[in-house]
Image 1 (cartoon, rainbow, N blue to C red):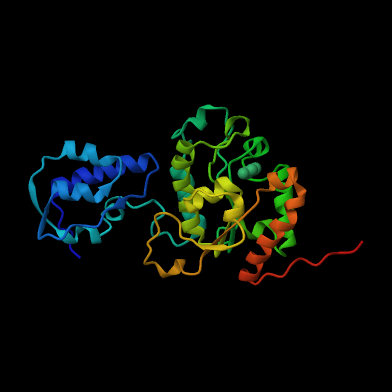
Image 2: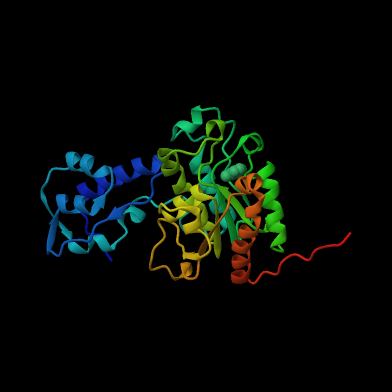
Length: 294
Ligand code: URA
């Protein structure tokens, strides 16, 4: 479809979108377009529901343009400034581009609250199974890898019990910098960081994402509920920014289970966590690891 945007509008949009991308924001929400023959800059503005709207209105005089009502059908944001990994088929290369885009991130306050390094993620870039935790702790911050401390050892055992190896899965967190004192990441921090996690998921395209604990579950599902409400079932899942019309996300599931750190504090819940993992194993056709008697 030819692009019929008014050049001034296109330029202003491109500038605004580039600015958002520098902030790590790639996902925009559009209202349903109104049915009209031609729309004004103000109409297009109204399609973009983000913090950019007001500023864009100020930059652009409200004049009539020849923008067709179809404008909402083209993904103008992808067209103007696609994500760096867009169109990169090799997930290793695509993840590298996301990591480069993240850079020495200073987008949220965690960068100045004692983090030693960014903990991006680790594992198989083509994994069928992905685990998502909350955020790095002291060990992860020191080593630059998620789940390498005590909770990580328990996660490794959980993965092993599923009949697979840590190297087979991909592991990441909602936030990539250690919150001071291992506090729960705050909303502005998760909102700033989770677009990068969503892009990692979009590249890896796992069949199942397992959210470890309530913070990961609530962020990935964008819903607020207790662990008892969240666990015990599959959710259809698609990372934010993926197209709902993209058939390759059909069948992708998200499951919620207890965070390994919680299981260390309350080992009686391990049986419940095992039930969650068995549900995942069944879906992926995995057989539990055989116990070796010694
Ligand atoms: N807890 C998490 O949520 N993530 C880690 O990487 C380590 C501990």
